[in-house]
Length: 158
Image 1 (cartoon, rainbow, N blue to C red):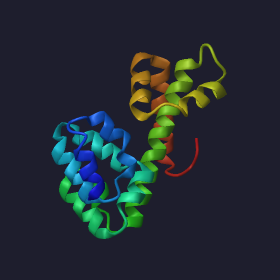
Image 2 (image 1 turned 90 degrees about the vertical axis):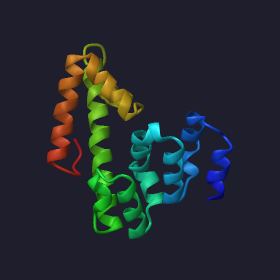
Image 3 (image 1 turned 30 degrees about the vertical axis):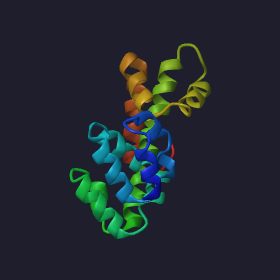
Image 4 (image 1 turned 60 degrees about the horizontal axis):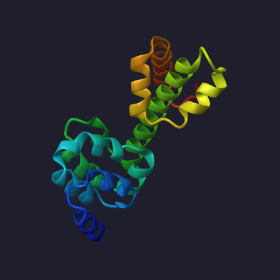
């Protein structure tokens, strides 16, 4: 909780909090941040389910229960064990990354080889991948097909 007190000293600067999220180690700190920044609860959820953050924050089933109470509409925290929840988090992360990479591949297809679009997609976050898919029909179709294929084959690479 000491680190959260340091975060509290940042005031209402959400950007600085985001930059320091990787230093948060307890689910109670996540609750503190969400109560401090209620308008950013969806973003906090997205940060929590990133595999590295999830592994750092959720080490026992009581952590899952705590997050399930805080995010009641998200089934991922209602899994029986930490291992089951982590497996789900990793699958979701993989699917979202596949979507982002495929969006970049579709977007850059007219001007670059497919491999270069795939490489560029590695540098994009989920939000940017979604934006790319919204502005280009080829990117949207490519992203959707990649996401669906990945979801259908949970854990296999595209």
